[in-house]
Length: 125
Image (cartoon, rainbow, N blue to C red; front, side, top):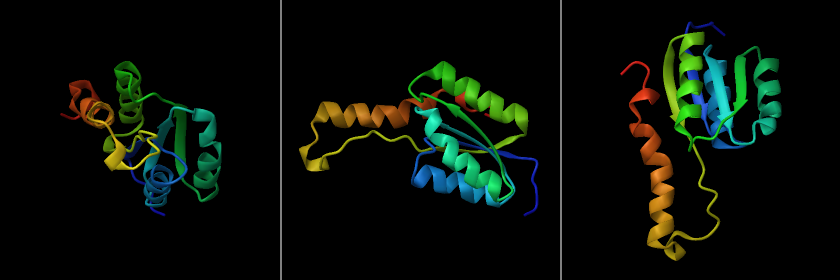
């Protein structure tokens, strides 16, 4: 693996898609910052990335809180230039979309759309 001077931030680095994305970027030589609401659940992901020779920094992170997002991304960028941010939050909605009310659909959409619009969440903007 060729080491890069670049960071990838994965918001919502869970047990499935987010974790796999983090592992792939780490395997490509990126330093990976991973965050999720239950940060203690990141330990197996951290162990796997480090065992494969990757660099990973993990923390608890609530993507609904702008101050936490701004700090997370600023810390990632300060570590090495932030090249990619993967916003992979989950809504934890466990019912079919056809049973979703307009209010619930709007709230789930806001969880993904609003943080992406924060100017401070784009260090290189």
